[in-house]
Length: 128
Ligand SMILES: [Zn+2]
Image (cartoon, rainbow, N blue to C red; front, side):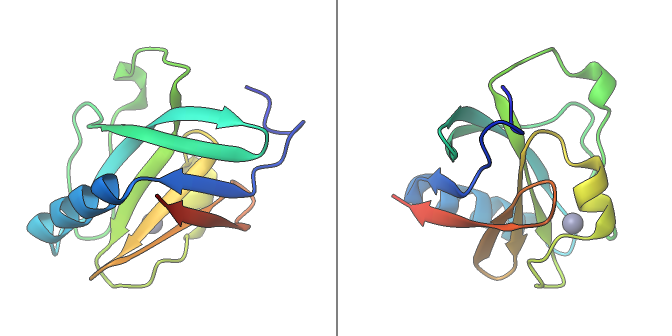
């Protein structure tokens, strides 16, 4: 995985995953949720295939946290998705700083999903 060699520009995300994660975020509202993204990176595109619930995840009003040290080394983890109960789907400084993997996805409730790379550049999201 060499993200500097090939810049990401888009994310593929199935409609089923979209519905599932939005429902999960709504159920947990007003707490923030975070899930890891599993999938693959290919020529500037990220393909999200499933979610993983991070160990010891704890929803909080301000920030969802988890213990990264408990994660098994897994190269198929390509990023994370978390909700912004405030509804603004833009990454905070901390989101970019502590984002795991090259893809940072944000759910702005009620139903918006946007994706960014670690530099905060917006990635096109294709719902397939
Ligand atoms: Zn955030």
